[in-house]
Amino acid sequence: MNFALIGAAGFIAPRHMQAIHDTGHDLIAAIDPHDCVGRLDSFFPEARFFTEIERFDRFLEKRRRGPEDQRVQYVSICTPNYLHDAHVRLALRLKAHAICEKPLVISPWNLDALQELEAEYGCRVYNVLQLRLIPALQELKRTVDADSGRQRADICLTYITRRGKWYDVSWKGDPEKSGGVSMNIGVHFFDLLGWLFGEPEHWEVHLRTPRKMSGLLELERARVRWFLSVDEEDLPQSVRQAGKYAYRSMTLDGQEIEFSDGFTDLHTRVYREILAGRGAGLCDARPAIELVFALNHCDVVQQSRCCHPFLKDIRPKELLRYRKAA
Image (tube, rainbow, N blue to C red; front, side):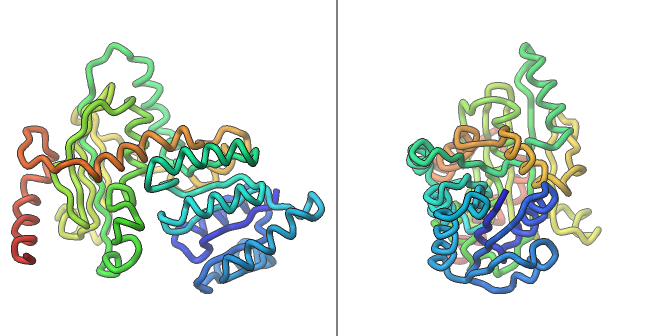
């Protein structure tokens, strides 16, 4: 299979290069407006590289009209969130399947148009939802699905990952381009929760700022208190003392769910699933995108008895910070 890659200089791009390489296929072209892409030498030194999307498009379109063995069958997309929709459309126009990082889109209604284009061009749109492939979480899903009569589980989800001042001035810090913290770092966790515990029935947001967000989510089989942050101050003291910059925890009825292992080759597993015809598509991506969009646009609940435990100390500091800024 021939692959092309959009967003070759991005953080996640090497995992896609590795996955294409490990599954035995060829990357023939890559594009990024930034030219710091020496990482290509580790996997595909013969790949053509472009810094202008128009020349990249022209190169691939010419190959589409050529012999079958020169055509691109898959386009991998590792670009900023707000560009995913446009780049998926480019892939489909080339009569190629799209493999897109999450979130697939920021606005749910864009999924409807992509479904129409899938039918028009006869190609698929796949989303990278790699947490679904972690063995421990697959085992948890089998357990949850088998015990249909159990009471609603109590889940506490915490994800804090340090981001420096650059974050605020990059596209990631612009909600119009990233979808905010809930979309940028949270969408794969919301996808995981829905996949494990069913459709959302009720949700509340207890805190929403540019760098952190927290709330309550009630699913068919679980009640989830969740907290997301890119602020280093929110890291537990023990984590900071250990010199670490991220903290991830998910408990079920007070018991920690361990899913730290098995992360190294998840993108390769995703690619193997896609190439075998079992990849996650538009219908799989839709529930989490619709949920995050709703969380970003609902009112903030100031008083709730079901807050995340971190919120007790954080909310007063955030209110004081914003009062001072005002």
